[in-house]
Image (cartoon, rainbow, N blue to C red; front, side, top):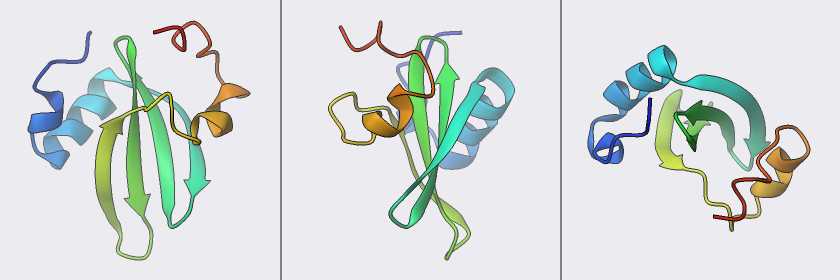
Length: 85
């Protein structure tokens, strides 16, 4: 499956359903007040930001390869071929 153009326009519960059914969980990190789960959906990496204090998903976004969070992932999974994008 490829990431639909409308994926980030649908509700968070629907995004979660798609990620759970069609995505592949890669890993989780702690990032400030969030637990960030990284999923592979088609050919895109998607981050799910979960706030434990409020017991809710704050946001879901495509992985930003220019973000400092990339350093948490780079040694755990092979995303180097995607960095050339």
